[in-house]
Image 1: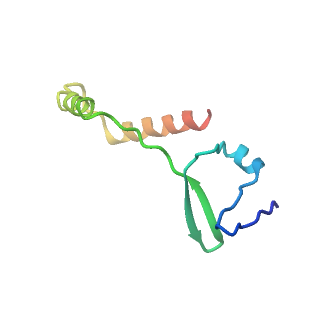
Image 2: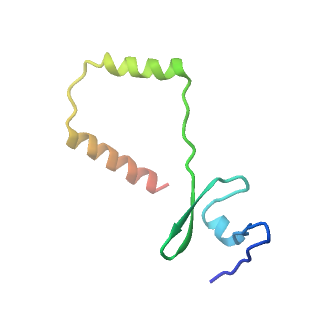
Image 3: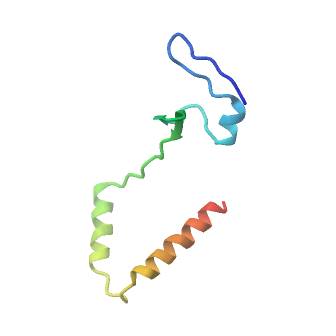
Length: 89
């Protein structure tokens, strides 16, 4: 168990071992959640932004798709496989 102090400004220092374990660096945005067990800090995932012209072009390409129909089961299998791949990194 690690202990930290709440400053007069309401700031908390997260111990270095925990920051390192979670790969949190200075400037990492954290969501603060009030839970039944206490306070939970979760990293806020950065959203990828795409410029409007590139986004519209990506949508247009999808509308022009003439390939084979992909079943929901195939899509779910592909998503599961990608999740497994990313989890192994």
